[in-house]
Image 1 (tube, rainbow, N blue to C red):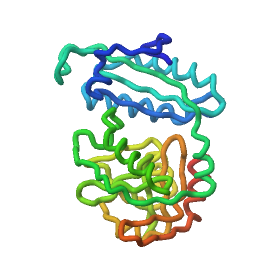
Image 2: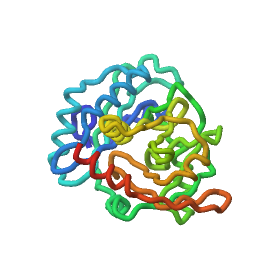
Image 3: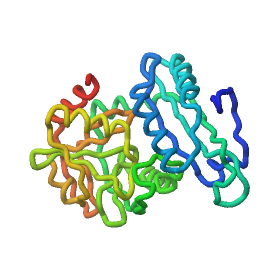
Image 4: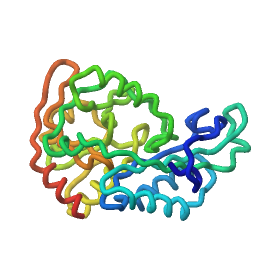
Amino acid sequence: MIVNGSSATQLDITDRATQYGDGCFTTMLVKDGKVEYWDAHLTRLQSTCERLFISSINWGELTLHVSELAKQQTLGVLKVLISRGSGGRGYSPEGANTPVYIVSQHSFPAHYQDWQRKGIELNVSSITLAKQPLLAGLKHLNRLEQVLIKHELANDAFQDCLVLDTDDVIVESSVGNVFWYGENAWHTPALNFSGVEGVMRNQVMVYLSANQVPIHQCREGLNSIQSASEVFVCNSLMGIVPVSAIEFSDGHRAYYLSEKTRDLQNGVMNY
């Protein structure tokens, strides 16, 4: 693990990442010694730090260390975490002017390749996301909602779940962004109030727009996805994963095709 350019295994106990979840992170796929979509991940880190008023770090140094660690992996995962740094007791960020970056290596989740091939089934989480426009779209360190969602999902026989906000509007899945096809267009939730603006989500949207395929960002309830013909979830590690079925809270189960999703899997990967 690299902490601010040096090999380390510990973090200062006064660091605001551990005290308040004051920071952000991104998780990246490494293939054949290179990080996929590094420029997009870097841009997201920079934008998030700007929105959270975290002082700029040495981005060039971070890029160098990410590249060096990636060369050690044929297929793996790198995570970059940025903390505002150490500060005194209390919420105020005053005096915490030396941010910390951490780069760590991890194994690739082998089941993701199985998901890509076979697809997965979802249910709908009973846990809803709070609406907070100031944090919407950001992959910040405050992930307690997601921890609770994963705890609930661990007791179910589903690989993933749909997550709604407190207005019962579709936001994402427990692991990534969600898209569905209906009325001759793709749809994905608008992230004005909650949710994470995923790197793979943006790659899919760029690809669809470049190929003149309609894509709408929307705030829709479950009725919209119930009547869809195809659904998929995506993130930077698992890529695009078809959803074969969704079980809704009333016991109704909807089944989906994957023809257009398979085309997107191939198209986005080679774009």
